[in-house]
View 1 (tube, one colour):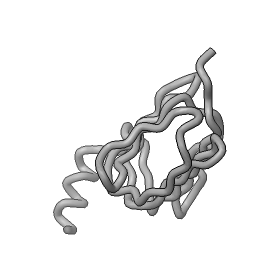
View 2 (view 1 turned 180 degrees about the horizontal axis):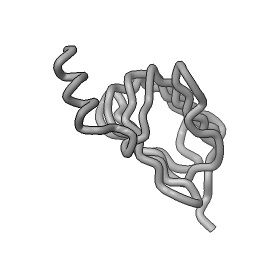
View 3 (view 1 turned 45 degrees about the vertical axis):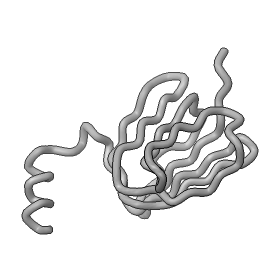
Length: 101
């Protein structure tokens, strides 16, 4: 069995995910970063982009706003301004956001 780590993904409105993870890919300050179980301790800012979470049961794709990521003692936390499941985002919503910007 592949090793897991404990992960919490939280935005300002809700807890997105709480549980075990096999792999997490985030848009870190220095570029895309992937963490797995027993990763060295780290704290890094996170930019706007895509998060790919692989759990023992499924893969979850999120689009996130900026935030912070930390990992220590096989426990990781991703605190972000906002998040949407990638399949929740519609082309209409994207166009509306572009028009507002």
